[in-house]
Length: 389
Image 1 (cartoon, helix red, strand yellow):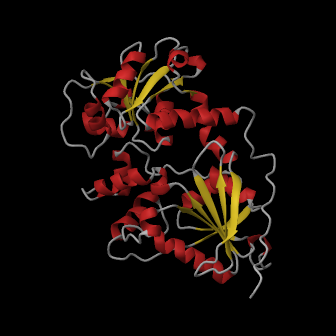
Image 2: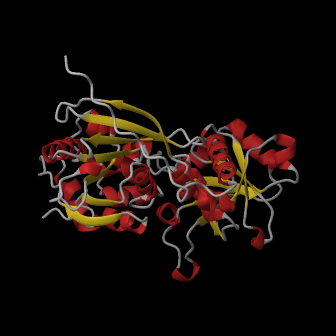
Image 3: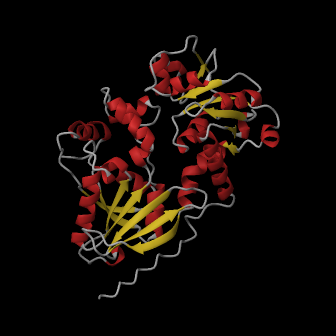
């Protein structure tokens, strides 16, 4: 019986990607506030001190209940506004006038009920808009409020009001600073560390191993599927072959025909194995970063006639919410700073390069349409700029 090969050690992390002092506390504040919103509770957001205003008490519309709304009302010291992405507000009240356009829309609701909040947050909810909705100027920190909801993988629709004095101390409501929210994506990436490693022989790559990465302040886990020894490639290759693959439960695991993710995943592994080495980063950013639940909602909107891009916008998300700082950090942890990127998406090339990874070349990775995903692939090319020719 052949002895198992020893695994190459993971390089020790260098000082550059580590969080700045205090970053861990900011990460924990964001995670706790996001968790409170997910479970239907309240959270506090302190706007930038330069704004000269006090904290906001928050309640996510998607998870609002009568009990949560009662808690919110008891802790509020002023009128409440529903903060929404402008794209969602436009579907309710029509487009904002250009002179009044803002990155966040704020609506006043004459009648506050959990059912009304959920209806206004979700374009898939039964039709019927509560009467009397009016646009109002968004409060300071509104963009950070919606970002916090997105970090919680909730629909970006949050009820906000000025908080009563001493709310956090008296009620133990989790609080977060606007600066914590702004720093969160980069701080989370910098906190990623390898936590487990094992040889996992794959059908198409018997010498594969997997390294799991996680930040202490986050439950999200990202994987590096390493084939061969990417750092010891032949001199004829300018850099190891690398793919950034967003997790896709429906395509990768279930074999969904709506996308090309499963064939791209398996095809990338086969190609790396044929070349003798490579790294596939399997990133926990399902649905272009909106999460599995929201991806399923986007699918339902696509069944009503929207394409991928417009479905994401209808939910209040950007067309692509992915960022590449975590991918760059994982590559650095593996000792890889120069890559040949296996992708059809120029945005990945530009995004990874902007994070300090040298992209020596782009390798095409086209999967032909299957009769079901033809429109999806056409949208990728026409509206997301993927190079599928």
